[in-house]
Length: 294
Image (cartoon, rainbow, N blue to C red; front, side, top):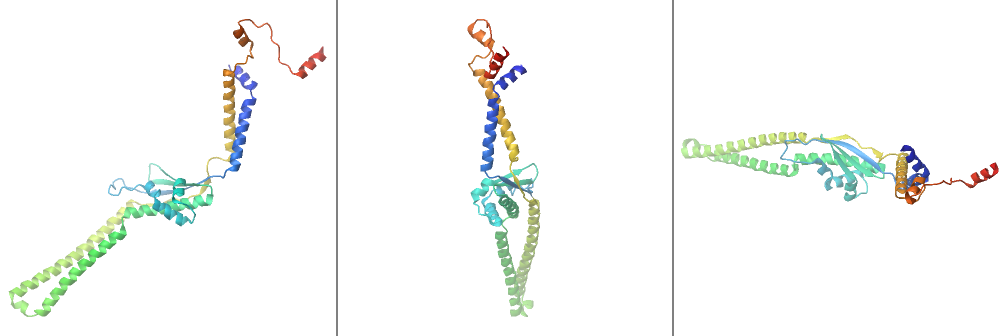
């Protein structure tokens, strides 16, 4: 069986060799004509606690957002569009909180700059989103603090004014004494409100710090551009081997579907008669040698 297969391949050996030669030549031409592609990969960590249901952040969505793209383009100082960056960007996540941000580009320095910029801007933006809108929160806190301070100052001013006006009569007249007690209680209530507010702000800041730490994110490994795929020589070897394999398949297809009769048994099966003799195939040189021998 193996010998018959080898004979079939050897008889049409030029076909696999032709396939391999053409495939290798085509790949060589494409390799010389095309620019090499580089991939720069940066590694980051972005923690997202499982129990943080009130802030369901997805780091891959943050990385691929337009905000991060615009910031990264500005940071990297390259001429790029948001669509172009998103097309060249890929985010790979494993089972842990570690993510790999890869940029594919024909320029190694450009790929490295964009990958590092996207990694830095995405971790910073992720941290900002985890901490909430600090600008609007601070504005609300400042307004509430001002209102409470004004309430305390108004209550204190009213008590001081009453004491100056009724410095002697408040002690002798029960109605004036009751009015002074009411003003004093209002001042104390305002003071307590200010103290409770400041204590609540302190606790809120601690809670915010804890939340931000739970959503910790930073760059673990800077990007470095590497050629994509194997070397040119390995590509040529792979393509040449594939062409050789396709050529062998073509040989067997020609052998199976071919209608030429090149075996005695095929002639006997087709004609229904035994073969009397076989004329061997000989070249002109072999025939001349045979004539000289005679």
